[in-house]
Picture 1: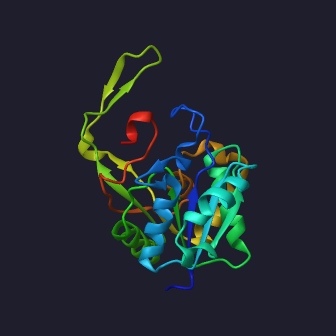
Picture 2: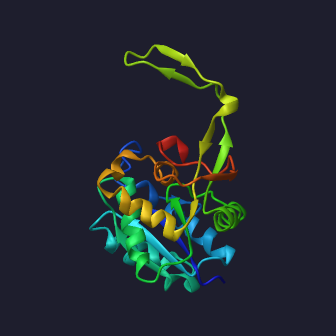
Picture 3: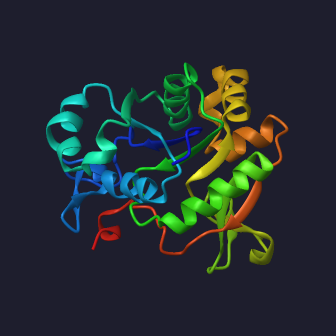
Length: 224
């Protein structure tokens, strides 16, 4: 096991588009809460010695009473919690702050609503991040992308061969991503993900091949 890598899982959103009374990350998938699937996939790689899970403030009891007992025992003592913020990037910043006292060399940041991530993909991102400093997994677009105007009409037909879809986990040297978060702390809400934040900070973001199976649960029909 590496002693210089952390794995962050964000699950602080409201799951508004999912509907229902239960956050999507807490719902069961193949007998295990959605949130725990990615943690256990990361643990199986043997690359990480610390994990940070970001939850909405007030959900600590859900973690300790319902989720933690279902996590594989060797991994339980490696997980700490961080409170979610008002935006995804603020939530990530809270997780990075939790790691900053004993900072790892590499950190991977993953959406808790992507339970089908594989250990193989996690390993690819980790290795490229260690080599290049910043890395994201990407997949080719299948549908022809269009840009629409404010009233819904198509205003531009985009070439899908020059576009990709970004996935998580996104991997970085900790010092780079933490400094980028600190630099843009008052504007974190403007960035859709950590790759965009790195780009704004002038940090080259490299890519590895993603996995179509590694999809994100957003709507009710995304769960089998």
